[in-house]
Image (cartoon, rainbow, N blue to C red; front, side):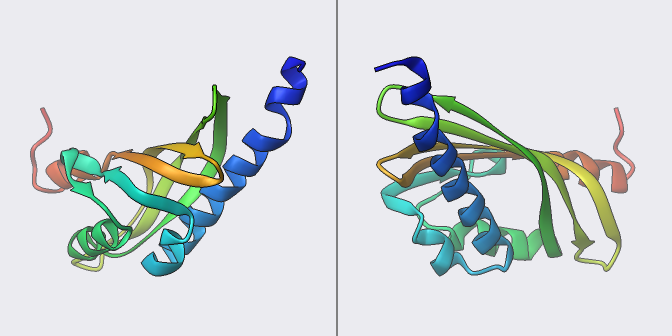
Length: 139
């Protein structure tokens, strides 16, 4: 098998799985997002919070934002042996709980996809930094 045969279609379809998951999670429809995840998937969210279903991040986000969406700038796809690592990189935009709009909040989501399902997700963004600055803490 050539490198091209190993890396062409499966990683591209794995990136589409990640994109579909993110689109469903932004509605937000955590049950529709869960369709793209294997049983036992661990979602490690900002601050090291762990969830076993997309309802966890959706509930957490409801405490932090009035609403939030992702502007997905790119997907970096890293094929591996039996799995694909997909990074979604972009910015968040939305509205804080006090009604103040925001945009340009950087994020990186890292997914591991095996057999057409997400098996691990890690989430990082600059929201905590932005919240600190809003409270006058800018070291």
